[in-house]
Picture 1: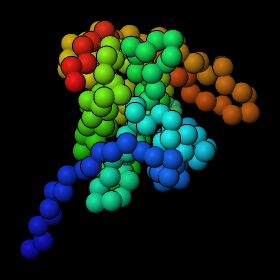
Picture 2 (picture 1 turned 90 degrees about the horizontal axis):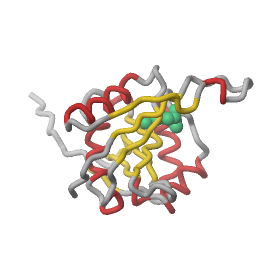
Picture 3 (picture 1 turned 90 degrees about the vertical axis):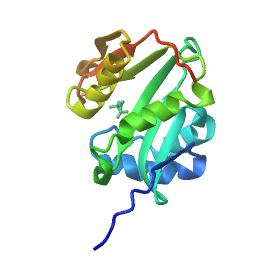
Length: 170
Ligand SMILES: CC(=O)NCC[C@H](N)C(=O)O
């Protein structure tokens, strides 16, 4: 009888060398905007204090990217959350958000901002659930409307979620 060992998922900062694998992971999710491999290399190189990758026995199965806007460093803007199809419904997105907030790079964060298209139900649930679970105020406003995107590349609305203020006790 095979016993599936529940090996822990490992979380670490990405590096520029992870850029291609992140690009492939995001491509495979099929639900996010696929940025260039170069963009993911930049995130791994210059923004990795506010990004993480998740690995299952060495295989990259998750990615969360963020940055702290220079004009508003108390905010963590969460750019993308990607989880491999094979690893959905295991709480990995929530674990990546929690793990990211526990990083030194998120010390002093009091607000989370992100945009989530109405079709991205999992991410919508993640952020609103995070706010509800911790009794943190949250608002959803227009963000980037579909009409802001080029006609040549139609895109869903990207409503802006603002969660906070909260005390990110690392
Ligand atoms: C939280 C998240 O993954 N938002 C996605 C924003 C946008 N559609 C993108 O894919 O970059």
